[in-house]
View (cartoon, rainbow, N blue to C red):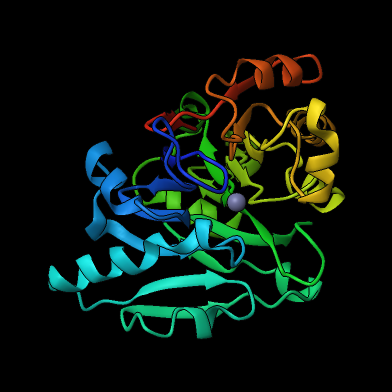
Length: 295
Ligand SMILES: [Zn+2]
């Protein structure tokens, strides 16, 4: 079971309505953080996300607005007696940036495509992958996908009709078929593969193909939407996406749902961004701090 809480949805600097970027993803009780902007620990407290359950933090890129909250959160955990390290996955340079926090177990993401094919981290039947995005030359920026592993499910009525009971369920999964009474029962005849859910977070980025590929068939795509098309030049200059860019990525990726995120400070209401995105991709909503979504 995966659910998420938007802790902060602002771009660059906080506003009265929005805190800096951070998303808490809860998987069977454990918590992962996607970015951890300034103020994250207070947002966690307000929104009922437990500090003590944080197992790993994924930093999309090394701009202050995406990671300043880590230091305070680690200090609070240390004061509360935590000794078990929190894993941190971040771009090259993370070891130096986070060296002061002794509670962190730091892993720099290796940008080679061979390395990125493997999960960075696995927890409760979910794999976390990083993929490169485009947020200005010379700096490594990543998005992340959290993918539930596919699970085999039994058609209950078929399994019972075939005479399967108790330990036979695990036995047939191991062997692929099983002799029950006089008959041989095939696993594929009484079960099916349920594809896992997929959550994709862009981090800060322009529209980019590597994201579209990573977000293929995602159940939810959370995408940078700092600007509107009216500010096209600024978006290009600062390597951010417009709402229309985010919608185009969601459409090309065949995502089920799009959540506009990293909302530019001039949008006191996200309506103009929503309107722009929905013309391209109707299943769009805009992130708000405190929003909770279950997949
Ligand atoms: Zn940012």
